[in-house]
Image 1: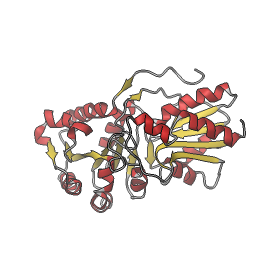
Image 2 (image 1 turned 45 degrees about the vertical axis):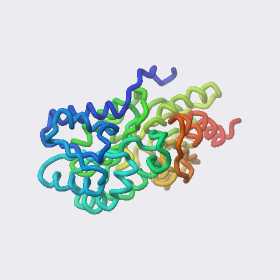
Image 3 (image 1 turned 135 degrees about the vertical axis):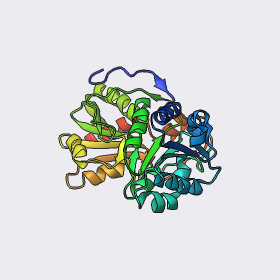
Image 4 (image 1 turned 30 degrees about the horizontal axis):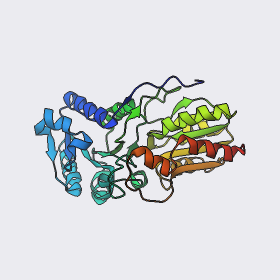
Length: 318
């Protein structure tokens, strides 16, 4: 494929996360894990089994869990706090804002099963607004890995960053994706594939969709550049402008609401140097139960086909 190396095998990001957290705990005795009765889903169970004295089961009490984590951070520990992304960002919002972000406490918030990946449990457990919530909180770093390799890197980065970090973990399998021009770390956007007509910004599972769309568009004579943006905050404006300055139009795609996520961040970055932009995401709606994650992605238009339609419309081709 032009500019894209062959994609390798898949892995479960939750399993990858659990093993990466265990490795970090083996290397650093300061790391502790807290969970809200979901350790078998978030995979904090890896730490629970190996280091039970450094694992804290908080029950279904996310607010108390976050507050306890702040106390552990103040005592010199590096707490990794776990729940579904809906609950760690929603139920514990006040504690995250007041006790974690305001004093820049060294707490790592891990939101598992974001977007529609918890497809069976419906709107109450699916979060499509977590990035918008966390982007609005000062002092917060937000990481949304595109593949299992970046999940491992995200754990290392979260451990190294002194201060609040929110890490999104999908429930669904992810492909390992090669980067054409990597950033210095996940904190910088990475060029996944070269292109000259349009730039597609993506993250999470949507990066693989963008690469699939690129192949279809090439057959139609449209050259699409694909850029992965795994760090949503802080977002380096100059790097976004680097990838938008020489193309006709821009597309963003994310497993999140069109309000407040990657699309909003890119539009904010390009406001003084705008390009025609199409934001693909969940159009101000809640999720719903389904038989599979894929079913929901297709229902809400988070697919390679949607990217292709947007590209044709922006470039007025077809």
